[in-house]
Image (tube, rainbow, N blue to C red):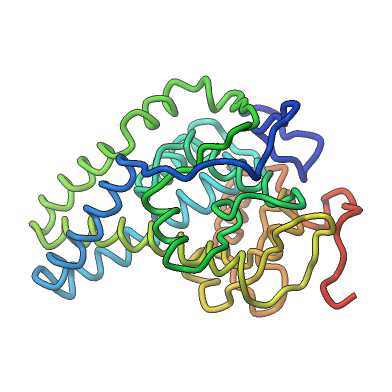
Length: 305
């Protein structure tokens, strides 16, 4: 059975703030693995994408991108594995996490650590500009897509059951290779055009789109809530609400991080939460957290207050 949801729904689940942990001092270094991967996918998408475009290949891109972002990144990685905002059978969690790995950003352990480090740092009064997306779009794109931050005094992580899970350890070690069975299936179905648009263009769009929405969500846009004491406040990115499966309502997420529902107000589409509700109707999800069921958070105030 999945591990129990923590009592503190607002906690950063995997991070242990050790004495002296400092979110400010550190060095940004080139990350050759992610840099070559992200750069290679970008080159293949921009060079080979136009040469292999067909309406069918574009349809493959739309379907595979939507499926991986909805099932994997939004529901599997973010709302279940990282925030534990709902419960589900372990077999289903593993399926969703595989879809998250198939997005092509990295493995599940890297995703948890990267997310929770940024979450912890942004709750502090000050943090390194790498963690706050500060310093302009060009530098931030280089940092986030091609580099890593090495803090001088980092916190410690305990990934719990996810860290011990053999399947997740396998995905962590082979996350790039997970594109190969997808590519083989697409090649069988439609040849190289399906492979280029269903793998290379998809990964390029997902990874770079994730960076862009993340950058905007921490630098500009509308706000409904302020988290007092946090050095970095979140913003909504309305134009990206639907295509990010609801993740772009990021101001809501900072306000209620343990909530499975992120789109809270009229007009805020949230396909991720709609899918979780579908799972619940099928008996495959339970203990679903929403703002109404979360404990009061003293630091939270309305933005106009």
